[in-house]
Length: 98
Image (cartoon, rainbow, N blue to C red; front, side, top):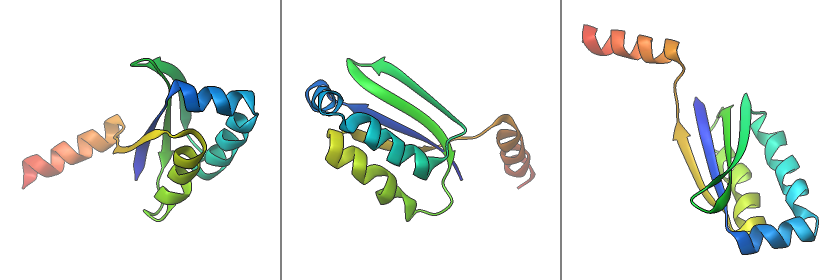
């Protein structure tokens, strides 16, 4: 299932991770698990934030992805199902047919 991962990092925890060098190591570990289609970094509501779009092959991947973000940077993590236009069209077609 195509998902969007939104991870927001509080300033204090992410500053510490940047200064001690763990930020890039955590991100590399997470990116290796995600194999994202696209990833964006931005400031959102005053926090460093990452939006990553990826294929969640199995729900058991969720802790593998989230735990490094929780423990390494005290992140707020959300997994949100998303669709591309063809998914939306197929869903609407099915909804209108039934």
